[in-house]
Length: 112
Length: 112
Image (cartoon, rainbow over all chains, first blue to last red; front, side, top):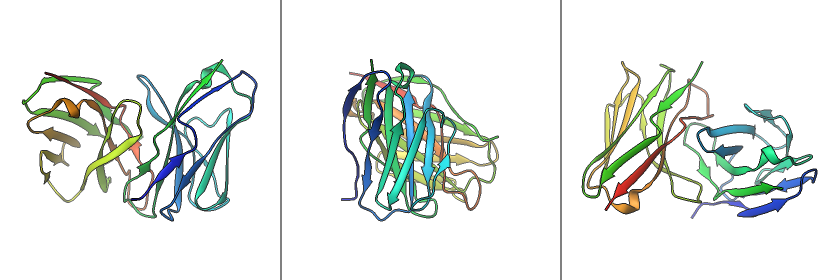
């Protein structure tokens, strides 16, 4: 069964901390995505990557960065966590072409 | 620009049919998708339809596409309490693109 695995289901971090959210896929997919999901706002794209070491800004990249050193792993980094980054973070991957995304289970991050 | 619109809430009685509607703006969309998100989980691909099709049926699910009106619907027959979830419509805006544009999601509540 194909999988996208997010390393943590729940995280609590303090304001100002550097936070790493990890995502690994085992499907040899080229494309990987990070979204955040907030009530009433739906899914908002933070960053995506369509190849190793490639990254593109999504709709809301401010306060975030990403790393894709290996094809299977796409990391989201909060350089200095703030309370307005409290959210559900969803990682997804897809092959080249429009075959749809496979999502991870999500990481619910609380910044206090 | 691209936009996908859905109503935010739908409530139905167990055993009735549910119809979740979606409108999109990009007439060059190639694929349209329906995703389901259960509480606390990631998104799961339910079904998809290619833009040259009018209808697709898969067990209790029927997808209807009206390309002229840019309207997509998902019908769930004999709705069960396990169908309670958020349903997202998504499109691939334009040939050659692989990045999905999501609606904000419709929360389906099934009343026993």
